[in-house]
Length: 134
Image (tube, rainbow, N blue to C red; front, side, top):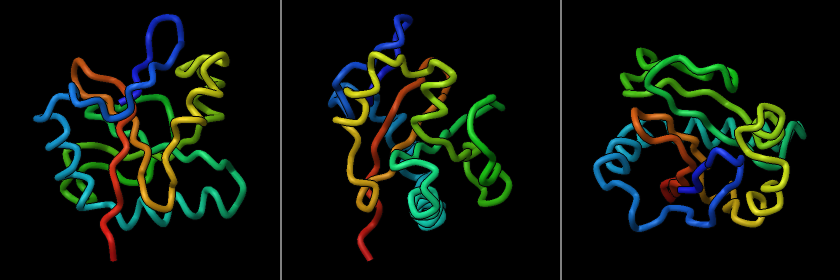
């Protein structure tokens, strides 16, 4: 996870071993239901040159970031899924401008990993989940 602090800084701890195992299990079991759709959405975001850094927002409640891909009832998931990218996160100051380089440096290959921004009760942060191999 890469956390967002009050100073709009990102810490370099992507998928830290301290990440709550229960939360990671919840996200992973939800992700497997929609991973092919997210992989295609990531490809389209990059292909259409919206951004080289797609981010998918997972939220238990409605949030004002990203464009809705599908809601909980579409695939019987725990989360709503929205498509976004680093440029929106910078514009909304979810990621501070001073952290843009660090974010991009730590961003994992979007062909292999999905960048998720998870908002779940007391947690809000980035998690990278590998796409299943074909």
